[in-house]
Image (cartoon, rainbow, N blue to C red; front, side, top):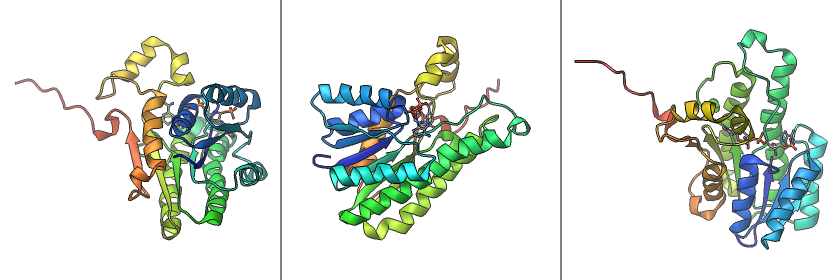
Length: 256
Ligand SMILES: NC(=O)c1ccc[n+]([C@@H]2O[C@H](COP(=O)([O-])OP(=O)(O)OC[C@H]3O[C@@H](n4cnc5c(N)ncnc54)[C@H](OP(=O)(O)O)[C@@H]3O)[C@@H](O)[C@H]2O)c1
């Protein structure tokens, strides 16, 4: 990734911060974005103190003007964009049956997780096409984008949509050398699972065939591969990083 410019959304913490770190250690100049400018600046300082190239540009991915301004700033500062990881997500509410989701709850999840990915793709691809040297995009889906999850109406619908956006964008821009893939992580230890406590984490780990919850670095390694030339024949795919959870269900226990 030496000499390349990479954008990571939702890079102020969790999986996005780990992806920014992995791309920067691989030699890229990484532009980190999220809404909270202070958190972003702290993350950039961590990278810079290790001698890595990183820049913070705050943006709200739900807002078209904000995403346009983000990409305009990258054009101005860096003149190109070689890789992008559309990882930002949010707008959730506690799990509840579909009928208890309000329209506002639903629209909130769709706005950040789906419209946000659409807006980022639209303006990232515009800048990538300007240099015309090929590029790679990774959209962050979830195992909830491959399999329904009870209680998570808005999140599940938005992540299934991310898979659709990924496949269409991959087809639309393959001829121009822009590869578009997605990652579907299973349970990963970031703030939400950390806050749930050890007992809850143990319960989740017990549902994972590999016997543990993932760490942000597990997803970052996959994102780095999909952004790099190592995956140059891979586009339009959703790569599951879930410890085997989506592979199937455990065998029935039958006696005799
Ligand atoms: N952790 C898991 O178990 C898991 C499992 C499957 C999939 N995923 C997916 O992996 C990704 C990262 O998850 P995570 O657990 O690391 O999330 P997280 O800790 O909640 O971090 C979310 C990041 O997105 C940013 N963000 C939220 N709303 C935004 C907006 N409107 N505009 C710009 N940035 C915004 C946040 O910063 P600000 O609040 O400052 O904007 C933060 O940097 C998400 O797409 C998530 O759906 C996670």
